[in-house]
Length: 212
Image (tube, rainbow, N blue to C red; front, side):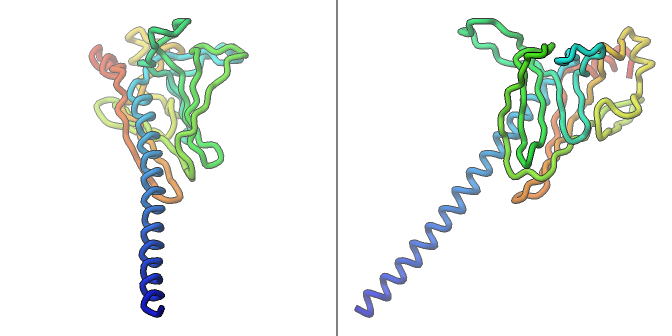
């Protein structure tokens, strides 16, 4: 009986340790998958930002910029929204998207239309939980040097005079950054940073005609 008790106790300890290790591994795997999913969404969205302002639901005289950010949230127009051929009603391949932190949750919101009416509602998608901080930094080229801004459009816009000389209008053609850096701080992984290139080619086109 004593030998059996010792063996049973040892087997219990082994099984208990195995259960704890499996629980931790499953939890970390689920968390890692959640992080990868969030970064994948952001990569697909931020890489395809285009210079397309939109009208808000209040029909304001000034349209919402193609990309706007206060530093801790971001909203923009992106291209490449897949339109399946079996849809009953055709829709645009452009999409208005926003990312924001709401009570510790990173949410992706999007609209089915670009120029919103009062009854245009956004659809929300929870991407990441246990997020403590969210911020964005925008990198752009100006006069041959790389600059950065904590919000977009920058507080002190640069290059507008040159752009308008080339036929662009500030209210209709918003300049885009070349790179968007996203930083999040989670309770388990700490601060994570990712940089995404804006592939619209807008900055390159301005540079080609001597507007940058």
